[in-house]
Amino acid sequence: MTFEMEFLEASDKILREVIPPRRKTSHKGDNGRILVVGGSHLYHGAPVFSALSAYRCGVDLVYVAVPKPLVTPVRAYSPSLIVMPLPDLRLTEGCVNKIVKNLERGRINVDSAAVGSGMGKTGAKEVGLLTYKFSRMDVGVVLDGGALQSGILDKVKGANLVLTPHEGEFHRVFGIRPGTTLKERIAVVKETAGNFQVTVLLKGIIDIISNGEAVAINRLGNPGMTVGGTGDVLCGVVAALLARGVKPFKSALAAAYINSAAGERALRRWGLHFTAEDLLVEIPRVMSRFDRIV
Image 1 (cartoon, rainbow, N blue to C red):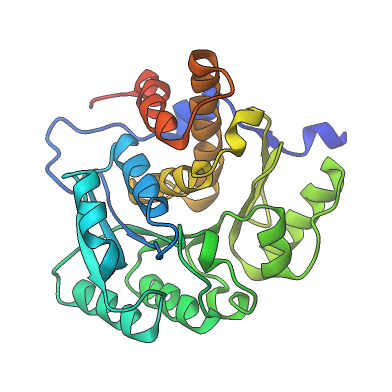
Image 2 (image 1 turned 180 degrees about the vertical axis):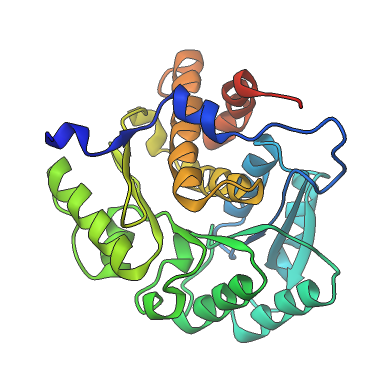
C-alpha cells in the first residue's frame, strides 16, 4: 500500500456520511446542547466565536461560561447565548466546581463542551479535573487554546476527547515537534493520539486528524484563515458535531473540512480580507447542502 493510500481525505462525501439528519418530531435539545468554557480579560470574543459557530452547525442550545466581567459583553453580542458567570478570571477549582454543580443539579444539560477558547493560562490540574468530571457525565470534550497546557495528558488520557492544537500548542502538550514533512507529521500525530487514547486535530496548512488508529488529512483552506478567531470557530464546530452524536474522529475530520470550506467561500466573497465573523455567515451555506429531515 502506498503512503498516499494510508489516510482518509476530508471531502463532501465525508460530510454526507457524518452530518446527522434531523427528525421531524425533534424537540428543543434533541439536536445537541453544548457548553463553551473560555474567555479572559484580553480575549473576550473567542468563546463567542465558538458558541455561535456551534449554533450555525445546527445545535439547539449553547451555554457560555465566562469570567464575570465578560458576562454583559457576551450577552450583548447575541441574545441566543445563555451565559454563566464564573467567579475568577482564569479556570480555577472554584470555577470547575460551579460548572459541575450546575450540571449535577440539572440547571443545565449538555452533550459536549468546548474548553479553552480565549482562556488565559490555565493549570493542568483544573483542565484535567473539568475533563474528568465531563467524562463521568458522558459529555464529549474539545480542548483548545488556553486549555492545551503541558501536564494535562495523564489527567485526560482515554477521555471522549478531541484536542485541536496548532504546532506550538502540540509541542507544549506532547513535548515533541510534529515534524516538517506530511509523512512525518502524520506518523507523529497518529502515535501521540494512540499513546494517550485521544483524538488529535493538528491545525496547519494541511490539517492532520488521528485517534491513534485511523488517520485523515484536510487540504482545504487558504492563507486568509490566519486571521484571529478561526481556530475558535473550528473548536465550536467540533463540539457541535460531538453534541449531535458524531464520534470524536469523524467530528474532528468533518469540522476541519467545514471550517475550511467556509473559509474558501469567504475568500471568494472578500478576498484575503475576511474575519472569523465572516466564517459564521458561511458555515450554514456549507452545511445546508447536507440537510436531511427524516
